[in-house]
Length: 183
Image 1 (cartoon, rainbow, N blue to C red):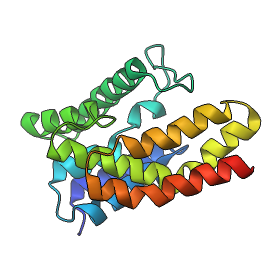
Image 2: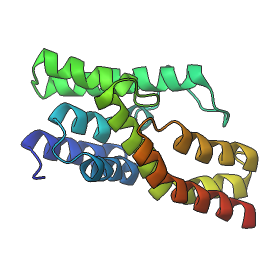
Image 3: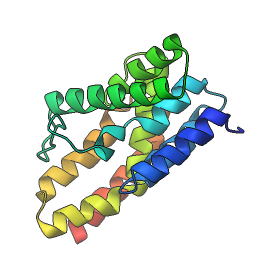
Image 4: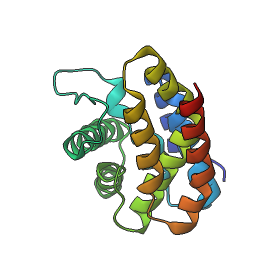
């Protein structure tokens, strides 16, 4: 699917601003385009920007302690939605479009309706595709315990609400866990 000018501009913003983990963000969009070709621009944009709050350290930035924590995921999602919404206003996007993107980002950890489930699934697939080494490194250095890293791998798979996509992700999760256990 050819990218719109807004997707191209946003991709550049993601790459320039979130250098630490922009690969995951861009890869999430690539996964969305594989599992749901032709998705609406708001769904594609939410997928591309779902974790942007992590690129903007600040006193209101939630910190993940390595445990699966609902309150953290809500705070992270809401902060990302706010930051992306502000950026989209700067791009002079229509308020209803901005609202739609913000609402999708707010639930990107959980899904909840068909479009939100796609954003969530693409995030999980990308995590299991490109962030496994990052988390294996966290386990190796002791930043997070191996049990916490394993729980993150399992969570990334189990939260997928689209059954056929969850099946697609299972071998990825299994490989990640296997690599964790043999390290």
